[in-house]
Image 1 (cartoon, helix red, strand yellow):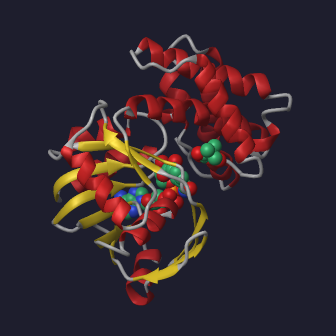
Image 2 (cartoon, protein in one colour):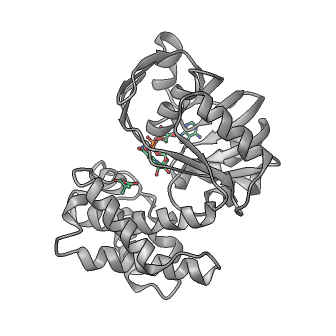
Image 3 (tube, rainbow, N blue to C red):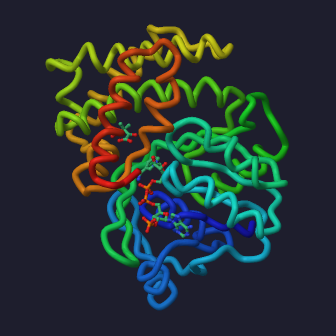
Length: 292
Ligand SMILES: NC(=O)C1=CN([C@@H]2O[C@H](COP(=O)(O)OP(=O)(O)OC[C@H]3O[C@@H](n4cnc5c(N)ncnc54)[C@H](OP(=O)(O)O)[C@@H]3O)[C@@H](O)[C@H]2O)C=CC1
Ligand SMILES: CC(C)(CO)C(=O)C(=O)O
């Protein structure tokens, strides 16, 4: 398969590097990372190891079978515009948050699959990416159900050794992941604490209320996500990733814009006061820093 990975930062470099073990891959990212990959290959370290030599560029090629989108959520619109110039059979978002697939579909003629990824990745320096945890990639039609295209992409991912599930319930999976990210990311970013400080600490009820509000918003949209499932998920993930710095806390500590609009912001207008407050506080910080 010819795959273009748009957004070769942490996750894109890892997934693109793994796909390159089996497929023709082009990483689209920024210099100096792209230049380093072209010159010396991409080194994968940590939970997976190896050196691969995918193509690497700052713009997409004219044609690919599949585009895997791994930019931060606030760059999705720009990614869609740039990928519109590429003749594609399909696109797949592995981003966190909700609404990325819809944004891509506004620009692309090719069908856009939904994805949810629990692999962990960190770009160490140009040309070097660390796998901080082998997880799973769930993918499927963004409206749910099955499709031959999702099966084909799933088979291609599995052949490259990526742990992959082709799922017929992507909307439920994405909302459940949203509940987890809504409950963990903004509270840990605002309090500057590791994920494990939430389940037994003073912000426990904030975490649980944010996840519960997301479950309610999901059900209002016809997605079957019981409160108990969302609460069990957020508590399990916070425990399993107890020592993690959440991606939003990392963004805040580096003075970078966060994905709050596509996480807590998605339900902020939904009679969801805890998410509305979390989103407002993170946005206030972004505004003060001149990031929005
Ligand atoms: N890292 C992880 O472990 C996981 C991440 N995710 C999700 O995956 C997505 C990506 O996260 P992550 O990899 O950490 O983020 P990164 O910021 O590390 O990677 C995104 C990369 O895309 C680049 N980029 C953005 N726009 C363009 C463009 N127009 N042309 C070329 N390159 C571009 C960015 O460059 P620049 O910064 O210079 O703009 C950056 O290098 C997020 O939605 C995140 O929530 C999901 C699961 C795990
Ligand atoms: C699961 C969790 C909360 C792990 O840190 C995450 O996805 C993130 O930090 O964005």
